[in-house]
Image (cartoon, rainbow over all chains, first blue to last red; front, top):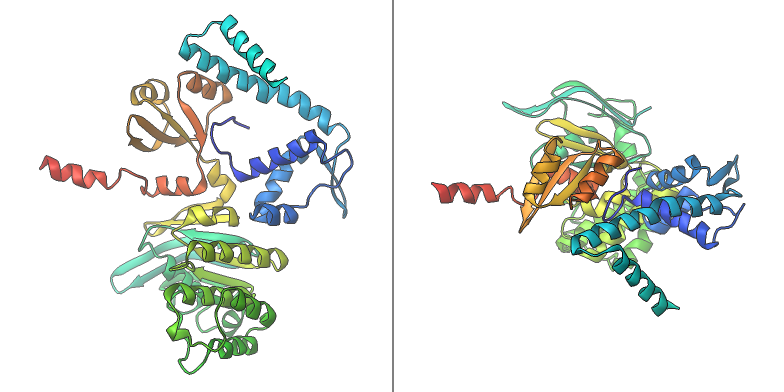
Amino acid sequence: MLEMDGEKPIYIQIAEWLETEIIEGTLQADDKVYSQYQLADLFNINPATAGKGLTILLDAELIYKKRGLGTFVSADAREKLLTKRKGGRLSRLVQELLNEAALLGLQEEQLIELIRAERKERS
Amino acid sequence: MPAITLKNVTKSYRSITVLNQLNLEIRENVITGLVGRNGVGKTTLMKMVAGFIKESDGELRVLGERPFNSLKVSANMIFIDDMMGFPDALTLGDLLTECDRFYENWDQDLAMRLLKYFKLPLSLNHRVLSKGKRSTFNAVVGIATRCPLTMFDEPITGMDAGARRDFYRALLKDYLAHPRTILLSSHHMEEMEDLLEDILLIDGKDSAFHGSITELQEKFISLQGKENVLKQYANRYAVIHKSSAGPLTEWIVDNDHTNLELTELKQAGIRVSAVSASEAYLAMTGQTRGGVDDVFDAMERE
């Protein structure tokens, strides 16, 4: 999947929403996942589009199907997602950060200082 | 089996050809959006499918039959538009009773509840309704008939923002419970984009795009940045549409880039974003900002 700026197509938003539910633990291993019809009702979208959101998670083996019963969260889903987000999303955010820093002519030490200051403020 | 099949279908009025050799299939139990600029033949296509007018040439099949003069198509199809004529002698309540008698799947309870919700008294006459209220009543009829083939031609004409949102929601809710083939034409694609599964774009007597909404959402990407930067980095891509607002220029290009190429563009300061189905539609039909500017620019030059 290509990484874009700005708003993403709705089925990708749904896939990411479900991923966040798994990371946060709202959906735990072997919990039943919303059906495409529940998602369609929840997000007010066509059920086929909602189904495409679920397919993204199925293809990544984050959820699994039980015939006639629905889809459920895979045992290692959370672990997989944490690895994926660290390698993917976080590193892309770092890339963006570096682009902005280069534009402003910031040195690496100044950038690290900024991160430290921000973390201190939060703790 | 598709709900609607067209093979080389042509429709002409005397010497004017509105639809030329159209080939397409509308999938059963899918919500399809029918879009295209004014006058490209959307209404003609729907009326032909409804059996109201006859095709001039080619083969048209609706629910397995040729729709013109077909009782089967009439009983299993409803066509909703803002020109719907109802007898003056009947009140809205009477009209619902008649619908109940004619349409096998009619849900009287749902119709009554929706009319109450939209504040449409049963005692009123259809003729005295405002434009928006009339569209709302027609839309309620379209939903409550639950016809295997339901067609809406510009159903939201005159409806306020709240009524439009309620209509889309009601249609989706009822479709989830009772899947059926729905054909929906509108000039407000950005509002109904999420409701659709398929899109049929008619452009200049032909179908310019017919596929799933997600396919259209992935067809293009938008590149925004300074024009000289775009020219330097993105000139090798096929540009579908160019527009500019102030210092920023936007190019809509085919979405066939690798992640590596995208990273390169971003590092050059170009913003890469997804193109929604309605934006893609506007770009493909030249409806984005800037088009009409050419007219005024040309006048200034002369």
